[in-house]
Length: 195
Image (cartoon, rainbow, N blue to C red; front, side, top):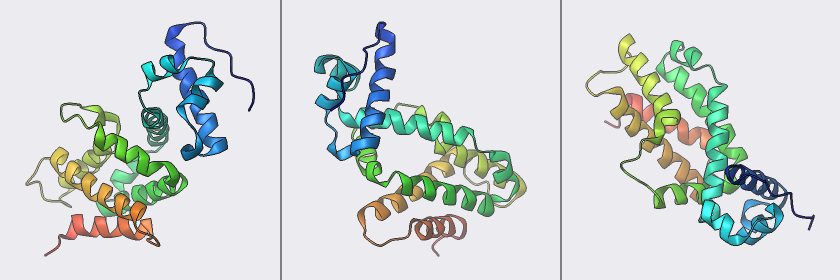
């Protein structure tokens, strides 16, 4: 095992340092193989310091994945998707999401379990997440008359997001499923209904 990294001098830098070390270890050894003790040792901090900032390995993983997802979403021109029409715009996003999920399959199930286990109904951290993306696309589709305006875009976005999560969970827990086909089924159900 390589020598531990140099510990940051300022306390405020420690969480970012821990995330950097965890990212390296997850990439080289695989998420499941890495322990919190390895992260602390490589980062040059005590286990107590690590657990103070990240009480479980999944909390570290969540920080890393959410930062990566936010960066990936920021690079996407959502105006193009909104102008493409709802179905085509969302289909493009779902294809990109399938690519992203397939490249992160090893860590998605522990991440989702952690997020549901630590769910806070009063939190509003979706402002930069997928729910706000779905809401913007739904609002644009309602304005164009593609989708009925019987419910607010935010409400429909949450419904769509849970359909999306259902397809993702089915793919993660069932062998031999194609995530793109699962997402296509979600989109068809949302737009056409099940009647």
